[in-house]
Image 1 (cartoon, rainbow, N blue to C red):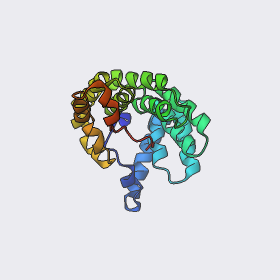
Image 2: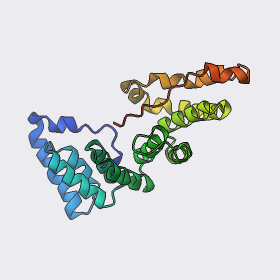
Image 3: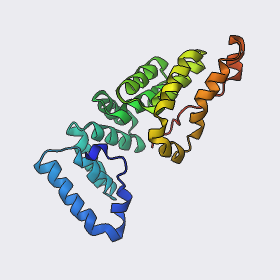
Image 4: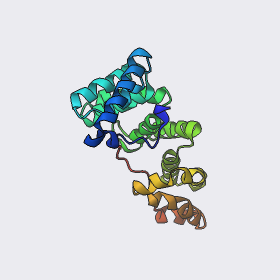
Length: 214
Protein backbone atom coordinates (compact mmCIF):
# COMPACT_ATOMS: atom_id res chain seq x y z
CA UNK A 1 0.00 0.00 0.00
CA UNK A 2 2.83 2.40 0.90
CA UNK A 3 4.54 2.06 -2.48
CA UNK A 4 1.27 2.82 -4.29
CA UNK A 5 0.28 5.92 -2.31
CA UNK A 6 0.12 8.87 -4.72
CA UNK A 7 -0.98 11.57 -2.27
CA UNK A 8 1.59 10.88 0.45
CA UNK A 9 3.16 14.18 1.50
CA UNK A 10 6.37 13.79 3.48
CA UNK A 11 6.65 17.61 3.78
CA UNK A 12 3.75 17.51 6.26
CA UNK A 13 5.61 15.01 8.43
CA UNK A 14 8.82 17.04 8.21
CA UNK A 15 7.09 20.13 9.62
CA UNK A 16 8.42 20.70 13.15
CA UNK A 17 4.93 20.98 14.65
CA UNK A 18 4.22 17.43 13.45
CA UNK A 19 7.39 16.01 14.97
CA UNK A 20 5.57 13.68 17.38
CA UNK A 21 3.52 12.13 14.57
CA UNK A 22 6.68 11.77 12.47
CA UNK A 23 8.44 9.91 15.27
CA UNK A 24 5.52 7.49 15.57
CA UNK A 25 5.54 6.93 11.80
CA UNK A 26 9.31 6.34 11.75
CA UNK A 27 8.97 3.82 14.55
CA UNK A 28 6.27 1.92 12.65
CA UNK A 29 8.23 2.03 9.40
CA UNK A 30 11.38 0.70 11.09
CA UNK A 31 9.31 -2.12 12.56
CA UNK A 32 7.92 -2.93 9.11
CA UNK A 33 11.38 -2.93 7.57
CA UNK A 34 13.48 -4.65 10.23
CA UNK A 35 11.07 -6.93 12.05
CA UNK A 36 8.67 -7.79 9.23
CA UNK A 37 11.23 -7.56 6.38
CA UNK A 38 9.21 -5.08 4.30
CA UNK A 39 12.19 -3.35 2.70
CA UNK A 40 10.01 -0.88 0.78
CA UNK A 41 9.47 0.94 4.08
CA UNK A 42 13.11 2.07 3.97
CA UNK A 43 12.23 4.32 1.02
CA UNK A 44 9.71 6.22 3.12
CA UNK A 45 12.10 6.38 6.06
CA UNK A 46 14.67 7.98 3.76
CA UNK A 47 12.14 10.60 2.63
CA UNK A 48 11.64 11.62 6.27
CA UNK A 49 15.35 12.17 6.90
CA UNK A 50 16.71 15.72 6.71
CA UNK A 51 20.28 14.48 7.12
CA UNK A 52 21.68 13.49 3.70
CA UNK A 53 23.93 10.77 5.11
CA UNK A 54 20.98 9.15 6.88
CA UNK A 55 18.82 9.52 3.78
CA UNK A 56 21.50 7.84 1.66
CA UNK A 57 21.82 4.98 4.18
CA UNK A 58 18.11 4.10 4.13
CA UNK A 59 17.78 4.50 0.36
CA UNK A 60 20.66 2.06 -0.04
CA UNK A 61 18.98 -0.39 2.36
CA UNK A 62 15.80 -0.31 0.26
CA UNK A 63 17.73 -0.80 -2.97
CA UNK A 64 19.88 -3.64 -1.66
CA UNK A 65 16.77 -5.29 -0.23
CA UNK A 66 15.40 -5.70 -3.79
CA UNK A 67 12.63 -3.11 -3.48
CA UNK A 68 12.04 -1.86 -7.03
CA UNK A 69 10.93 1.52 -5.69
CA UNK A 70 14.04 1.59 -3.48
CA UNK A 71 16.30 0.83 -6.44
CA UNK A 72 14.84 3.67 -8.51
CA UNK A 73 14.82 6.16 -5.62
CA UNK A 74 18.39 5.32 -4.65
CA UNK A 75 19.44 5.55 -8.30
CA UNK A 76 17.90 9.01 -8.60
CA UNK A 77 19.65 10.08 -5.41
CA UNK A 78 23.02 8.89 -6.75
CA UNK A 79 22.47 10.62 -10.10
CA UNK A 80 21.59 13.88 -8.37
CA UNK A 81 24.79 13.45 -6.33
CA UNK A 82 26.83 13.16 -9.56
CA UNK A 83 27.32 9.40 -9.29
CA UNK A 84 25.56 8.99 -12.61
CA UNK A 85 26.90 5.66 -13.78
CA UNK A 86 26.12 3.82 -10.55
CA UNK A 87 22.81 5.64 -10.19
CA UNK A 88 21.65 4.69 -13.67
CA UNK A 89 22.49 1.04 -12.98
CA UNK A 90 20.19 1.09 -9.94
CA UNK A 91 17.41 2.79 -11.91
CA UNK A 92 17.76 0.15 -14.61
CA UNK A 93 17.56 -2.65 -12.01
CA UNK A 94 14.34 -1.12 -10.70
CA UNK A 95 13.00 -0.80 -14.25
CA UNK A 96 13.82 -4.42 -15.01
CA UNK A 97 11.95 -5.35 -11.82
CA UNK A 98 8.88 -3.60 -13.27
CA UNK A 99 8.87 -0.22 -11.49
CA UNK A 100 6.78 2.22 -13.57
CA UNK A 101 8.81 5.39 -13.05
CA UNK A 102 12.06 3.47 -13.47
CA UNK A 103 10.89 2.06 -16.80
CA UNK A 104 9.83 5.50 -18.02
CA UNK A 105 13.10 7.08 -16.86
CA UNK A 106 15.15 4.54 -18.82
CA UNK A 107 13.16 5.39 -21.95
CA UNK A 108 13.58 9.09 -21.20
CA UNK A 109 17.33 8.70 -20.83
CA UNK A 110 17.72 6.93 -24.17
CA UNK A 111 15.39 9.49 -25.79
CA UNK A 112 17.18 12.62 -24.58
CA UNK A 113 20.63 11.30 -23.57
CA UNK A 114 20.06 12.17 -19.90
CA UNK A 115 22.25 9.44 -18.38
CA UNK A 116 23.13 7.49 -21.51
CA UNK A 117 23.90 8.17 -25.13
CA UNK A 118 20.82 8.78 -27.30
CA UNK A 119 19.40 5.51 -28.63
CA UNK A 120 15.93 5.85 -30.16
CA UNK A 121 15.52 2.08 -30.59
CA UNK A 122 16.02 1.56 -26.85
CA UNK A 123 13.82 4.56 -26.05
CA UNK A 124 10.97 3.13 -28.15
CA UNK A 125 11.36 -0.29 -26.50
CA UNK A 126 11.20 1.09 -22.95
CA UNK A 127 8.34 3.45 -23.72
CA UNK A 128 6.38 0.55 -25.22
CA UNK A 129 7.03 -1.63 -22.17
CA UNK A 130 5.87 1.17 -19.86
CA UNK A 131 2.72 1.67 -21.93
CA UNK A 132 1.93 -2.05 -22.13
CA UNK A 133 2.29 -2.51 -18.38
CA UNK A 134 0.92 0.78 -17.04
CA UNK A 135 -0.79 2.80 -19.84
CA UNK A 136 1.64 5.56 -18.85
CA UNK A 137 0.58 8.95 -20.22
CA UNK A 138 4.09 10.39 -20.49
CA UNK A 139 5.52 7.34 -22.23
CA UNK A 140 2.66 7.46 -24.74
CA UNK A 141 3.26 11.17 -25.39
CA UNK A 142 7.00 10.70 -25.88
CA UNK A 143 6.58 7.66 -28.11
CA UNK A 144 4.12 9.64 -30.21
CA UNK A 145 6.69 12.44 -30.44
CA UNK A 146 9.37 10.01 -31.64
CA UNK A 147 7.08 8.73 -34.39
CA UNK A 148 6.09 12.29 -35.36
CA UNK A 149 9.77 13.28 -35.54
CA UNK A 150 10.30 10.33 -37.89
CA UNK A 151 7.40 11.49 -40.05
CA UNK A 152 5.18 8.53 -39.06
CA UNK A 153 2.12 10.58 -38.13
CA UNK A 154 -0.41 7.74 -38.20
CA UNK A 155 1.66 5.84 -35.62
CA UNK A 156 2.09 9.07 -33.63
CA UNK A 157 -1.68 9.55 -33.63
CA UNK A 158 -2.16 6.05 -32.20
CA UNK A 159 -0.07 6.88 -29.12
CA UNK A 160 -1.49 10.38 -28.73
CA UNK A 161 -4.96 8.79 -28.72
CA UNK A 162 -3.81 6.42 -25.99
CA UNK A 163 -2.43 9.32 -23.94
CA UNK A 164 -5.68 11.22 -24.44
CA UNK A 165 -7.66 8.25 -23.12
CA UNK A 166 -5.82 8.26 -19.77
CA UNK A 167 -5.15 11.99 -19.32
CA UNK A 168 -8.05 12.57 -16.92
CA UNK A 169 -6.49 10.24 -14.37
CA UNK A 170 -3.52 12.58 -13.92
CA UNK A 171 -4.83 15.91 -15.24
CA UNK A 172 -3.90 17.79 -12.03
CA UNK A 173 -0.38 16.41 -12.16
CA UNK A 174 -0.04 17.46 -15.82
CA UNK A 175 -1.12 21.00 -14.94
CA UNK A 176 1.04 21.18 -11.81
CA UNK A 177 4.13 20.25 -13.85
CA UNK A 178 3.24 22.81 -16.55
CA UNK A 179 2.78 20.15 -19.23
CA UNK A 180 -0.53 21.37 -20.65
CA UNK A 181 1.03 21.69 -24.12
CA UNK A 182 1.31 17.91 -24.31
CA UNK A 183 -2.50 17.78 -24.19
CA UNK A 184 -2.60 19.51 -27.59
CA UNK A 185 -0.55 16.87 -29.41
CA UNK A 186 -3.51 14.79 -30.56
CA UNK A 187 -5.30 17.74 -32.18
CA UNK A 188 -2.02 18.91 -33.73
CA UNK A 189 -1.36 15.44 -35.16
CA UNK A 190 -4.88 15.16 -36.60
CA UNK A 191 -4.46 18.57 -38.25
CA UNK A 192 -1.08 17.57 -39.69
CA UNK A 193 -2.60 14.46 -41.26
CA UNK A 194 -4.94 16.70 -43.24
CA UNK A 195 -1.95 18.20 -45.07
CA UNK A 196 -0.24 16.48 -48.01
CA UNK A 197 2.60 14.20 -46.88
CA UNK A 198 5.27 16.59 -48.19
CA UNK A 199 3.90 19.42 -46.02
CA UNK A 200 3.61 17.59 -42.69
CA UNK A 201 7.23 17.65 -41.54
CA UNK A 202 7.56 21.35 -42.25
CA UNK A 203 4.57 22.17 -40.06
CA UNK A 204 5.34 19.86 -37.13
CA UNK A 205 5.17 21.35 -33.63
CA UNK A 206 4.81 18.49 -31.13
CA UNK A 207 5.49 18.74 -27.38
CA UNK A 208 7.36 16.00 -25.55
CA UNK A 209 7.49 15.41 -21.81
CA UNK A 210 10.26 17.31 -20.04
CA UNK A 211 13.62 15.55 -19.94
CA UNK A 212 14.15 16.81 -16.38
CA UNK A 213 13.72 14.17 -13.68
CA UNK A 214 11.66 15.04 -10.64
